[in-house]
Length: 213
Image (cartoon, rainbow, N blue to C red; front, side):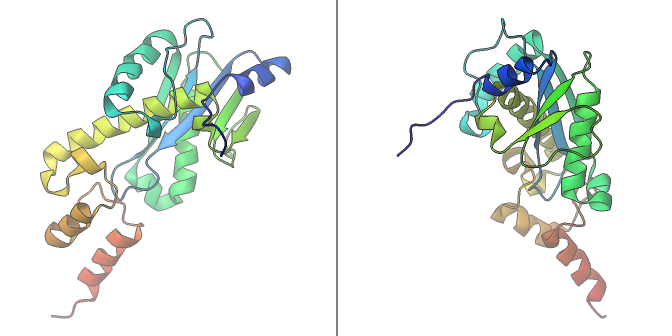
């Protein structure tokens, strides 16, 4: 059994060896939920000021992510962007995720000349060279940093929305299709923050339309 690996600067170092100077890691959070935006972050790390303990956000506790978030904001160049529920429904979730990534990259104060993208696809709207890295959040420190920033930001958005719509449990499920969330959809219907193109939400809409009096 292979030893567990941790993200490092191998991809960043390889990009620098090719002449790139400003290299950002990019990740998104929120493809799977039934509600809320998809959120992306782009991060340019300062190699001399990398917070200790960076890792794929999914492997970290909520408390650890919360501690790393301000450390990253203080030491790295960070840009956060979103694609709305309306954009997700109009474009599809993959394109909306890529749109959020493009917006995050374009929002950086220093224009990057290379992007490390989590996943196996490079957003079509990018106008800079990029490398797609499968499971990049577990392999590249820059992408791991972006995954933490995006995750903390989106979770906070869903906690705020849960104050307006407490029945759906978004403060604990972040909009993902848990049993409690699905039951609330059946009991209370859909909200303006639900993704109508996603099957469980679409099915409820369709049932509402198709029921004859």
